Image 1 (cartoon, rainbow, N blue to C red):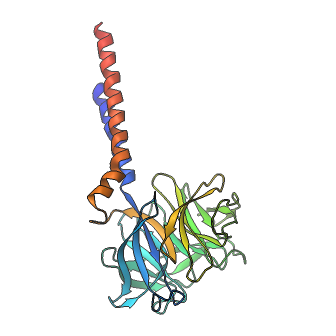
Image 2 (tube, rainbow, N blue to C red):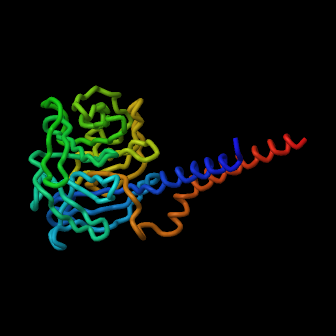
Image 3 (tube, rainbow, N blue to C red):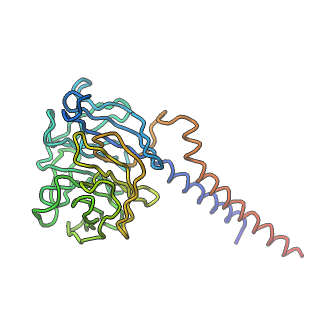
Length: 304
């Protein structure tokens, strides 16, 4: 094998590592009258550190720049990078609707009524938007132009008031909709068929796990919340094979949803960026160094 090809392969490997790290975790919240420090419903958009759960406020969410609005779900289009959300059925403005979000200003633009109450949304790699319907324990697809949701599969009268979904590839999704001590089930996206998965263990709050998302590195994250007023929330990771829940750290009260997307300009200071990129850069340099050593040793051996 030619040294130039090996070096090119190493460079590609390093580039893939860096690309995977460039995805940022975002969260949205929906605070209500239960929180005495807020008036009405108010939502915020945050950047979340996946290692510590520390959040950085990006913007407050408003319609027409003045009316606060909270969101139940968040999804970022994999091709366009556009932020989408869904409003709660109790929202004072555009209830149970699909909306677009300006990720810089927090401006929210309603698209249309969903026709159903959803608790979480996620995109697949092709840009199809899926939504979880907690009332009927079903998956649905959402039209990005009209906002209309179309259920898939059979409906069931079970589950909890909310739930989260994470699309994991291969035409499948994970769903947590039976509480913090329930199960992490698997949904076939084409048919809506649901198969029971492992029992969740280790959640600090038994009430609910919602707002699932699947990272570019293959880690399932979610929000573990209690039934308090306002609800406390923790960022957690979940092992999809065993159901083990690991608490990472506290999130702002009433955090509702998570989603990975491209990094916003100026969303992190230089120190944070350097710390985040240190592993993939070092890994890429290590791979390149090892290949150079191997090539040099082979060249020396052939000359001898």
